[in-house]
Each structure stands twice: as structure tokens, then as C-alpha cells.
Image (tube, rainbow, N blue to C red):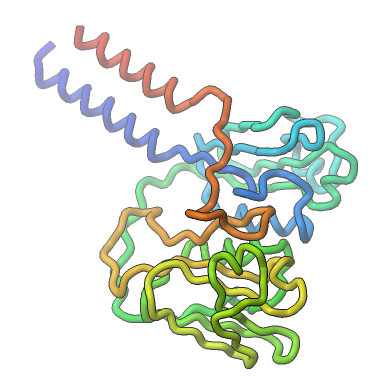
Length: 301
């Protein structure tokens, strides 16, 4: 076979490798929260799922405490009724990995006593990989963000995951403004340090007690906000964001400002969120890449 044909086939093989790599994402269910009975009920995992895009080939990783938790893949009807008697698949050892091989809805619950009824359940929708997204258009000026959108600033359902999910897909730049809407006399917003954010202490840089509280982001770096009202911070009324420069050039899809992940210790660890536990399951990417590369090399020789 001519050299031109061989290089054409090699190009196709490389393109297939790149497409497969781009199409597959590993999702750690609940991020740092993991898989457990969530604070605030099922909305915690709904919020987490709403911040994700699930495509064919992606992997779900459930991290939990062996013996205290498990995860069952079930039908829609079983999900609705928290019926774990006949699961499609049941895994009792963490980390539990599920590869999303087809499009459509997937449902997961815990089979432990009343865990599903208390909110340990997850529903997702899987779509085909749409291909690379276009780079975002550079912004022409400052943006005003209403924190929490219609919910506003309060003790959120589902704990701090709510505000982490709200901030997840946003890019904050110097000059942007955060607007905190709350009920005067029952809420406030405090600007705090990273340590005080983590520990939910009431040592503040500044406190705003009148709604709406408009805070302009004047410096790059991490910014932390909590409430000084009793236990509001511990219950999830806290926001962490990262502010970048004054202007932004187009960046590859997925290059977004991500706030520190929610964690059961109420705040990001020093230096950012801890990485999820390493999965002990076989690496599907590795098998695919190795097989395809072996085939290409064999073809040339």
C-alpha cells in the first residue's frame, strides 16, 4: 500500500483517539460530598447533576463508606418508589464505577434502610457527544451576577452545594458585580477570609446588612462570602468564587472559573479542593487507546 494511504489511515486513527478522549468524562458523584444521605434531601444531587453534561462513554464514580452505603442502578419506576428489590446492578464496594454506554435516563439509589427516601438518589440524562463547543466570545464589559438567581441569598436547600453549583459555570472578572438579594433583618452577607470561610467564624472583612447588597469585584483571586447569622454558614449559606483578570480572550470549552468544591468539612481545603479518590477500576481510556494504537502499528508493519 502506498505511503499516502498509510498516512491517511494514521490520521484517521489519531482523530479517533482524540475524539474518544474528548468525548469521555469521569464524573465524581456529589464531588467532595460523595455518595451518602445528603443534607437537605434529594435536591443536593439534583443540583450536582444540573451542573454536569453527561454523554455516552462518560463514567460515574460513586465514592462512599463500605458497609454503610451502596449504589443500585434501577428503573425509573423503582427510583420513584425507592424500590431496591430488583436492581439492574448493585455495587457495595467503593469506588463504584458505572460507564454510561447508551443515551437516555439513568437512575441510581441506595438500598440501605430509608436512605433513598431521605434523598440518596440520583437521576441523570445521557446524550450523544455533540462535538467540541465553540470558544466563548470575549466580553465587552463588566457583568452583574445575581447570587443564587431567583432563590437569592439564604440558607439553601441541599446545603452549600447550591451556591457551588450556581457559581460553577460562571467566569468572574475584575469589574463584575455580585448582587445579594435577601430579607433585611433575617439575613446578611459577610466578606471573609479563606480560613473564616472554611471554619464559618464571624470574623469578617466587611458586612452588608441591607438588601440588595452590591459588591464589585476589584481584585483578582479567590473571594469568600458567608452569613453572620447563627449556623447559616454551617447550613450552606456561603459562596466561594475565583476572579480572573480584567479582560478575557477566547478559551477552550470547559476552561471556566470553578469555585472550591463543596465538602463535608464546610469549605475548601488549603490550596483548593481535594482530588477525588483514585478509582481502582480498569481504565477504559487506556484499553481503547492501547488497542487502537496496536492496530495502527500492526498495519504499518
